[in-house]
Image (cartoon, rainbow, N blue to C red; front, side, top):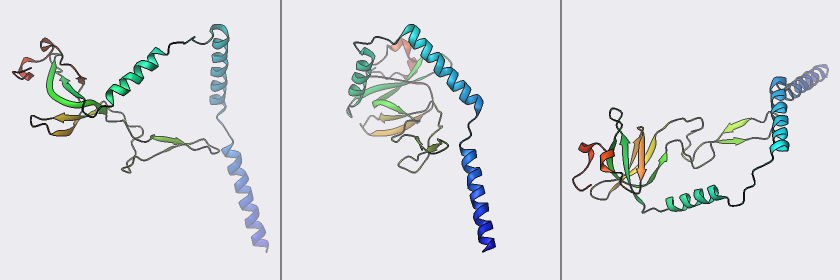
Length: 178
């Protein structure tokens, strides 16, 4: 019985210590956050908020999303020649390409617990891509037979629905019917 009381006392003491530590917050971070919030309030009071009525940028982005949502959208893609600065014509592709770091699911999920930790979330294939930083792009290339193949490109690329002027491209990369 004495051992049980002692074990319960130790467990309770450890639990109290853990709870106290979880409630601790870095005081300098708290001060910085409070200061930033105070400054933002002063700015809003002194200057106010933008008076938006047309939401034009939102409308532009909506239109871009809708135009991109076409599985038959044929585009032309180019890579940048590092030596001359000209574009190298690579051919046709479907759509505008997808940044390699894009994901179907949110890479992080916030768990509302005592520490407010951000927890990584796996992609549907089970791979964690959060923190991924790359300039690579997936391009669905179209070959001369019309077959579509995904290509992984790490170079600087340009994708357009229109062919760019030939003088901006490397001559050797252009087909005769460009």
